[in-house]
Image: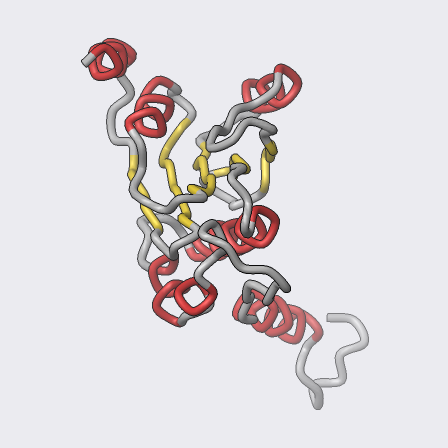
Amino acid sequence: MRGWDGKHEPLVNRIGQVIEAEQSKSIKITRKGTKNDLSVDRKAVNSKEYREYFDSLPVNKNVADALHKEAIRILEHRDGTEFETLSILDARTGRLVVSSTCDLKLKSRLTDDEMKIFNDHEGKVILIHNHPQGGRLSHTDLITAIKSEKTMGVMTVGHDGYVGYAKIIKHDKDIADKWEAW
């Protein structure tokens, strides 16, 4: 490296340490002035165990970190409301592809413009959205994920602290249609 005198740590190592330190910073849900049945369970979501769940996912560290940050961002935004936010992250890098807020209670969807962004994205994705009333992945969540060849996984984060993740192993529109009919 030009300019490196051998006495100090190379700049490249310091940058790597800064990035690693930034990724390991703890992200928390903030306290709001009001509380209702749809408020985020801060004790659960801000816990070490909650973060560790993301680290245990079958994805690389950067993607796990990005999913955790996006979960916190979504829960912070939708805290105490009946509304959902759907975000789509690149399954290899964790980069946000598109995020959609829906004005329908307890529903998530992409607008036509957001769907175009999704369709134009090359590579696999992971879908993540909140469930204001808590609970597991819904049949609609799973059917939506199975139908798209791009979808590698689907995740829900409940306001009650529940986190659900399904890795999509096989995409099959016929199975999705039969499941939906059933």
